Image (tube, rainbow, N blue to C red; front, side):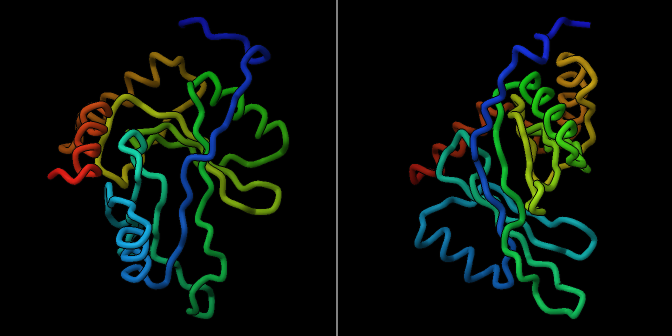
Length: 193
């Protein structure tokens, strides 16, 4: 197994990178964030069995998404949820930083309840002490259309994680290298095709 730095010498520096919002009026919100705010739709799809729409947007070709809109789930009484924050996402620079932060989060008593790769990122999820949904992620060198979710295991070596992730990403018809996707999105964001 490849050697990694001891956990004590790694200092994760989480950077706030994207926010997800629930919306009960997708068309109006999408028009506002694209037409008024100038964000570009980078991906869209459905999650779950109920056809819940999810739309990813960005103004940075290097970030698959900086902002996400998701159809709001109905509450127990059928009314839209009161909370609009779907998640708050922090980017880290490496899998080693992610392991360190994972250990800190779990040592603080937080329950990490989801650990997946989106193909373009390795992510783990938990709720902060006030119940806000938090994502901690690291970019991969690949792109696949979203939404995409595949489990991964931070106890594996970096090489094993990369090999497993690349293998399942290459099975996706929309697979490409992240650098190629970034160039493609730069063209779109600069008024190209």
